[in-house]
Structure formats: C-alpha cells, structure tokens
Image (cartoon, rainbow, N blue to C red; front, top):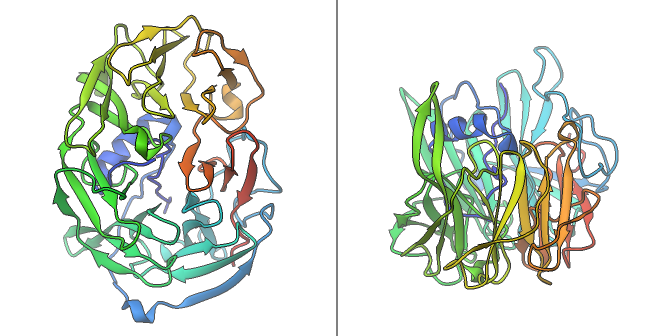
Length: 423
C-alpha cells in the first residue's frame, strides 16, 4: 500500500497536530507542494508494551549513501527530478519506505519508516545524535499499517500522531518519547487557551483540525491543543518562522465549490502573538495565490518585518510590513513565475529568499532580496526558501522528492544529510 506523509506537509514549523486524515488526503491531493498519496486501508491496532520495544541495532550511515528502493545515489542536486514510486511489488523482498527527516537540532535527526512486503509492514523510527555518523532504529509500538506522522519537539523529544483501524472504526492518538525513540508512551492532548511558554508548536497537518494549534513540551512530551483557531479557510501555518516571532499563517476568508473543488476567496494572513489565544488578520486585494489552494507564503525572522508572497496571473507579488503585519505595502520586486509553487523565508540577516517551482520539471526560479523586496536578484536554486529554524541553525526537508534533509548553521552554507542504508 502507498505510504502517507503529513509533515510539510512542508508548511508550517510547525503548528497543530490533526489526525483528520480524510482532510489530510483532501488537502494533499490538491497541493503538489505537499505531494502525498493517501493509504487505502488500515489494519487492527496492535499496541506493543513499551518495555518490549525491540532494537534494530546500529546502522553506520554515510550521509551520501543511497537508500534501497529509492533510486538515490550520492548527495542529490537541490532541485530533484521526480523519482518513481517506492511501493513494493508483490513477491519482492521487503522494501523500506522512509518518511521525512525531522530535526531536534543540528545534531539530532529522526525519521519514521516502514519495512514492508505487500501489506505486511513493521513501523520503525531511526535517529542519529551525531549528525548522521551513526543511526539507531527502534520499533514503534503500533500496528504495521497505522498511519503515522513524526515531529520533533526537542533535542530528543519526539511526538508521533497516528490513526489505526480498531474494529469498525478508527483510533487516533499521540505517542511521545523523550529519549530519541527508545521508549514511547501514549499521551492525551489537553485543551489550553494558549501555547504554554517554552513549548514547541508542531506541524498543523497532523491534528484533528487544520487550523487548531497543537504544541508539545520539549521536556516531557506532553501535548496541548489550543481552543482558539485561526478563523481562516484552507489554512496553512508557517513553520519557517522563529517561535519568538509569533504564530503566522495564511488562508482565505471564504471558499466556493467550483466543479467539485474548493476554491478560496479573499487571500489573507493572520498572526497570534499570545500563543494562539487571539489572532490579528489582514486581507489582501486581488486573487493572490502561492499555488494549489495555498493563499500566500508568509516569511519573517523577527515578527516585525514580514513578507507575504504570492502571484497574480503568473506575476510574483511581494507585500511587506514593517510593523508586524498591521499595515502593508506592495514592493517593487516582481518576476514572471507562471503557476509555479512559491516558498519564501527570511534569513537572520534580513535577506528575503523566494523559490518558484519545486522540482526539475517546474524549471524552478529563485530570487533573493536584501532591500526589503524592492529588487529581486536571480540566483541558482539552493536551500533557504523553506528553512525551518531549529536549535543551532536551520533545516530544510527534501522529502518527498529526496530522502534526506539539508541543514545549515547560518542559512547561507548548506550541507545534506541523507537517510541511512536501511536493512
């Protein structure tokens, strides 16, 4: 069966788990930016006692080694050519299927994977504490056909959101580990009025609602859901924003159904500076889009200088705010980008980086601006336009096009960390 991914799926550091997998499938099918294939069936939950979780041992991993079944070779070019499906063929040997790599910091990286033959799968989590020099794998205490999304809440704190079939229904929940996946426990998400201080906001694609903020305690793995929502339709929370800059997102003020498809109206951004308790919204003029039901891409480093990036009729449009999103001006920077997917981030030195197009077939374009978006300078495609701040620097996932992640201490010079050679 095809594998399922939720994590950024690329959008949004990180903001609110949602095991509404029907909604995940609907959104993912419309976003090439979040290319995903929904699993067709689920099997019965088989929780394994945490004390009985078995070690898969140590795997020596050159960051440039290929992953069986993925057709990789060495460190990939930044703009990949779409790879063939990795679904196992009936009768073949067992095939590992890795998910996206998530970063606890610049030394600690993790990914979940399935070792499958037909519908017989074992769920695993692998982690490294030395930037990919060695990896350790542990079995997840879930049925092999559970749908699982993994997020890092701290250096060694992991949260796994899952759905698994139980009888005639589905069971949805969370597991937490505070030792890098060695041991897991079931956690219940309490309701909170705002994200507690010091807690990490997690990916919004794997919780019960698209606009519900979910956060985890980096020390304990406890999880909360914030009662208030963004109030936007088809929301996407920006994960490439430092936590101290607020919780930023984009979406639409309304949606219409056209030819059986939801189409947004009123492109807007929203921000919460009090952990999701209250939200401030701004609606832009014109049919702005960042591609496939993504209204706008929001980029900021300090929460005061903020960019909203989208396109109108194939022309890149950049709006800038110098007062934390209260007032906005359209900049002079522009470019022809067609219908390419857009991503944007701001480096710690204030440089705006924009990427248009995600894979080689898109003929991607990339731009940088050091003058507040007034001029866009073309550059060779490289990581940086979806750079997620993590302790010690930045990380940018390559999944699903590349089984690994890029990391950087300064946002300028990037290295690639590939998945290990799985058994």
